[in-house]
Amino acid sequence: MSWIARFPEIKSNLGLNIGEFGTLISTGALGAVVSLLFTGHLVHKYGIKRVILTNIWIMGAAYFFIVRAYSPGVFLICNIAIGWSTSAYHISINAQGFNAMERIKDLTVARLHGMWALGTLMTAMLSGLIVNYISITWHVGGLAVIATLVLTTIALRLTPVLVKANINEHEHLPLRTIITSFRIDWLVSGGFLCAVFLEFTTGDWSAIFAKERIGVGSGLAALPYIVFMIAIIIGRLNAGSLAKRFHVHHMIRFLALFGGGGFLTFLAITVQIPADHKNIALTTICIAFAFAGIGSSVITPSFFAAADQRSPLPSAVVIGQLGVVNIIAVFLLKAVVAWTAQLTGSLAVALTIPAVMLISAAFFARAVKVG
Image 1 (tube, rainbow, N blue to C red):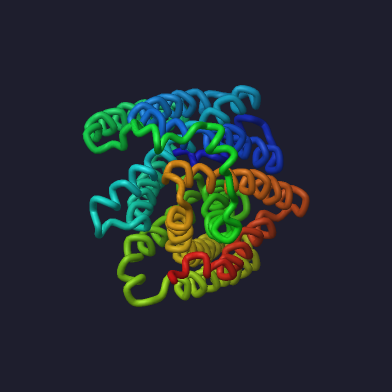
Image 2 (image 1 turned 90 degrees about the vertical axis):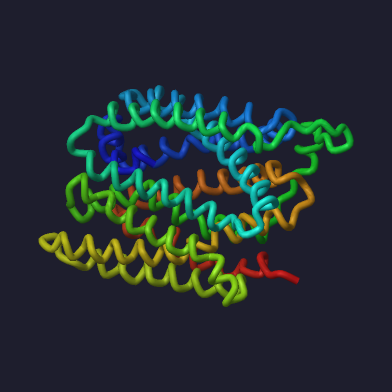
């Protein structure tokens, strides 16, 4: 998350236009898809500890070198490695999360995702504060080293409760079986994609929109993303209390319309504000992303949990299968957003795509309906 505020700088270092940069940054999906296909099997066979430690170090090394890349070729290799390791980490930590939920009854997937969002927020805020004072190699590269060492320590401390390798031959899932049993739950996958894509788009383009369209400095350019993450955190940490008061599928329908509609409204207002009024434009785009964050906050983990509940396969395998569908679709949609911005000359027009998708998540709400 630390390089969100540095995307304009990375784009400049590579000498690429918006369309080229958007396409290149999307290539992480290549490594992610392969990882998602195989990591569930690896977790089931070798346990979480070995898988997560290996990929923590791959991830750290890739981030360390990617911010030193001035060649699209080097960037491509590092980005694919990031895609692989991030997906493997994602599968491992979420499989462990589902395991923890079985042991700690008041723990929910939304709460876990809320804590992840809190981490991203703290990182984005720190990045915004230091972006003008520390070079990108010291900032992101240094953080990569620190995070790798800290995560390694945490994983080792968690060894007693980490999911162990499968030792029951009757429960063994050969790789061929996992591949042949691959099924797409279109209802869950469609809803998850519609809900999560605005989150991906915000990470990729919010800082660039604020800096290049509104004209604010690098420090303030991270503010829309920070506001988005605050809204995400508020929604996810309060998901449990909301679920007690409202049926989840009704809540999803309301939040999808509320978040997507509010984002489109304030995005339209922002582009009408004259260039001389940067502060007003920054305020309205932050409000737009606040609507988006609240709207997608509970929806994404709700579909995520539904995928696990609706499948008989182990959690790690389910997460991987959902991820394969999602990452392929995200790869294609990221390219669509990037080239829409390039061809229309307006990033605002391109941002309407994920907003409409968030609204569309309302049509998939029955996937989480109980009974």
